[in-house]
Length: 267
Image (cartoon, rainbow, N blue to C red; front, side):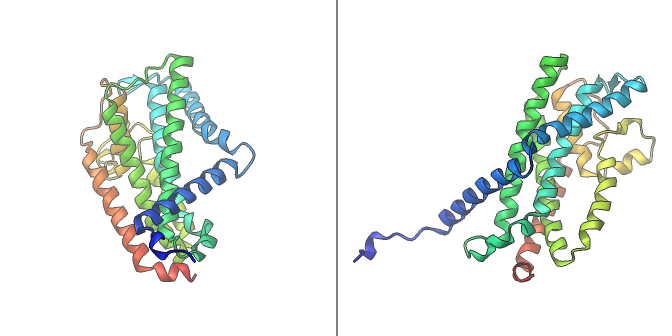
């Protein structure tokens, strides 16, 4: 007979960490092997987007944007905005993709959301480092940060914003499936006004000020300033505003997860 005194019950924290580890490994394998060349596409997508935009800027003879090389401006804008976009998209679809796992009482819907967000942040960081290193060595683009702290602050803020938006949308699409289409339509103007491909300094007032209500603008501007101290950051840029929006979205998303937890599980 097993001596019950030798059997130690795991703490809730230990159970949660074990669940997160298992989900992280599962999501990593699924994400990188979902289709043929899935891992390569993660890197090729921002490179192709950057190439297309660089061709457009070359045609209209733009070599410098707000004080820095146009290629550096585009790489930071497109790779960093993908941190938000991919995190929000993956978190939004996490519940539906992992529904079969919720039969195990240790696995909660919010676990799959958080693990997906961590995975996307990790992958995005690797992609950014590889893309920037390639641009530095192949095209001699100055992408060595003047202030790494600002770059990381912008990265973290955009990632948190993606997490918060994804948390809120994950509940919305589970309760009302049609919301997925509406969210998709709303995401387009948010991305277009983020400053990732459109120089906001070239926008006339009062539209430029209106665009500053988009929190993504502030993350991209700070990241570009961190890469080059010569960058002419938009007047009114406030990194704290990005973090405030992100934490409000995360709080709202987690509150919705708790409020509708039972309904989500029984959908």
